Length: 205
Image (cartoon, rainbow, N blue to C red; front, side):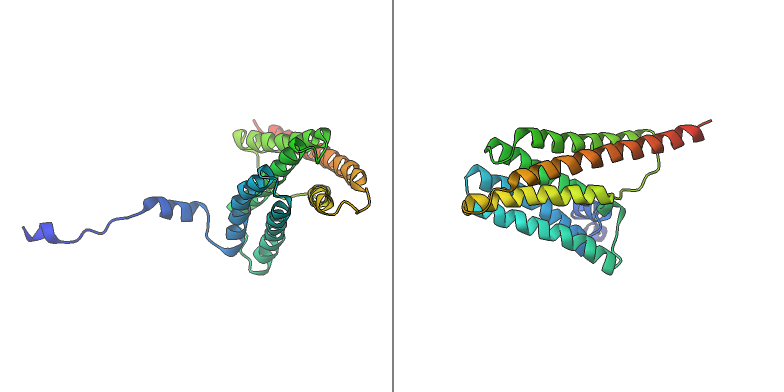
């Protein structure tokens, strides 16, 4: 009967342990997860027409995007899941911003279509590479980084200009620049993807 009274060691919360193994808990990944959590808050602010609050939340999210990569490099805390999670968080934030702002008629629909189409093509390519077991490195190109900056500027500018209507009308320059860089970087990803698939097929017996 004494054996029945012996405490048994058990994993009280296996899901937490599994999550820690899947997503290493370090500062860069925490910042990335924070950016993901800020995205629905940003959307709620837009739904409630609290554009000032939306700008504040979006700015914090953009700052976390700048910090997580910098901290990961300085502290040597780069992880495989972080390499996937960081661009996914960026695309989630910007796609949400463009769709919501297009609904509010603050951003043109055609620009939103370009941004969403490129992101869907990238996601399709990553999925295809995983299906065929193609080896590839998740690393944004210079053109892709410029496109992301241009998209961020578009979102920030339209939100600021709503608050300060006296600002000069330069949004269309930003729109066309963002559209051009997004399109060019999209074709660059397609070109790189085709090269990866070509190399993969040449290695197959």
